[in-house]
Image (cartoon, rainbow, N blue to C red; front, top):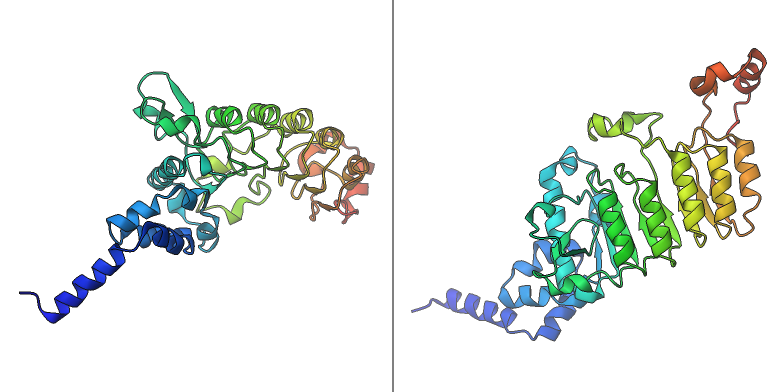
Length: 331
């Protein structure tokens, strides 16, 4: 026979589990992503069932969790990537066609490739591929995706992005910052297949002073900073004429690359070229003068003698001239 305490606990559990699905979904919709994943979905079977409601997964945003913590070496491990991959795969499956935003970090495009059988598959997210025979929602899982942010993903490659370009025609915002295995080829495909793209963030880590990343980000990754700044600039200019917001911090593009962007993307309202050490203030002024809609531009705010990069190209008078232009990167 149950004691009074056991009876009350049983009634309490029963009350929670017997809430209608509509009520449970309403409750869960008011919780943060962290609270849903680490608390609510573990209450009981009925709560877990409600947790999988598609409307609860139309937006998958882990940025607040990452931003609330100091960067950790653990985030750059395969084990951590695997956990993020697993979460994303579940979200894509549960959301069905309602998924509109993905904001995550430290995922990969390799974790599930080895489990595929046969060649009949379709990409539906930045990191995961589902067999059409295994998942019916694969054909529609990402068709309504509008925002994709996959910062700091060292094992996301052109293979994933090329499939996203085909599968997500409604994409309007893309953040592939600190993803060094993604090249200008992906930018071309995104531009050609996603005509609604308005925001592109393609920032690199501070390669001029990597001390802020050392000890956290693997050294081999810090040293793998993309060198083809002008190739990426050309890809952006030729395939993304509708861009309104562009971030390319610490890109290695030259004045020629910046000019291409400004000519090819006339609707730019915001441009961030902070840390672009190959640009002079006059380069920025000249290129951006054609941007009639430009509202804000962020320029490099440090001074590095050009001799650090191109000593052999300058005569004594040029080195002397630039050495005393302490605001060379400011306008």
